[in-house]
Image (tube, rainbow, N blue to C red; front, side, top):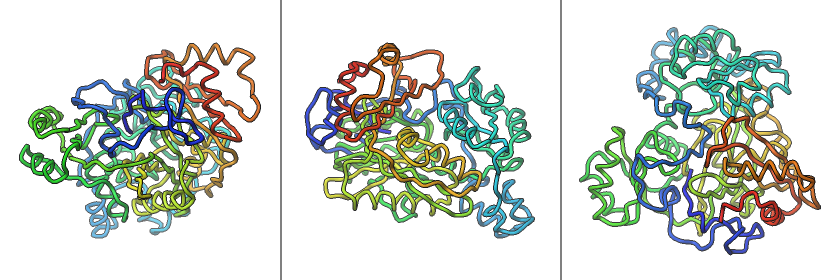
Length: 488
């Protein structure tokens, strides 16, 4: 996701530009996907926070690269075409035995067990939605008393790289999904060979690497910001000369929310930026800045049978590298809304995604859309769907991986989703236990806490969905509670 300057973060939901408790960015400074991620030069070891849902203890850095031989989309397809009797995944084996359309008709009915790789809040909310539908859940997670483990039927407490634990997850599950991208390569390979993982490993392979992801987006016919692969300081100097400054250098793997990124504001910074980020031992990519007006995201769902649906676009506002709130409906034109949904669906279809895929985009002043990042899972910016849509993103993910008909995605009410971080917990709990927590005229707050044991600063502890007849009322409500006073 993107970094923000907390002092600029608040404009009123009615669209006026101001400061204080406002909810949208003031001004239209020149930025890009890159600058949005960092407001100043950020060394690779800089301590930032993930806007995806993985907690620091979730083994996020212990990720082995999936080899192209195992998971490269072209290589895998060529291998299957050449030797259909020797499929590379468990689900391919089913297809080889019963015909290529078998996965289109394989349905996992309620009462079955869904295995979840990861035990964080996304897994928790997925399990809560699925249990309402009659599914059982088992999660594999190294931390005791995990958010997902608290509501699942069983937690297998082991490292994500533990092959024996993964094999046990495969043994007890009818279908397996994941709640974060940093999946160990050996475990991914084992699960796709020994269990039913309709999402497969190809999409993970693609989204774990910025260059592969950008190329896949382009292959879908969707634009990204101009970029260049960087293999040497000379490459970097040439690319900076082409793109101009400021521009941003990123690691292709392992970087997010400002980590593994360096904003280059002058040619003098080139040697230091290259030396610092090269220490990560991964590929590097340089991105050009693009002037943008808003950040939006669309979450699309696709099932093995090929059915695809998209949720309404969310307008996202970030503070200090972390998503602060999502406004729905986004303050964009109907034509941009339609185009954003169309692009998300095109990407889901082109990449043959199964389950959810979140597509983060930037809207320029000229009304053009550029895709910034993808996330092949439920997403923080989709939490608003839990009360505000006919189907939540979590129910939709269950429906998609189980090959059930997808649910309707229409918006029932305007909504503002606001994240609750560790520093917000104390004032939040005081508010929740008071008379003021009741619904007020035109606004109903819905609280979701994730069951985490320690309220660390900047740690995502929950969120509040503000259901309202006018999203501008959310600004007034947030100011009245004092919960988010630390965000100015």
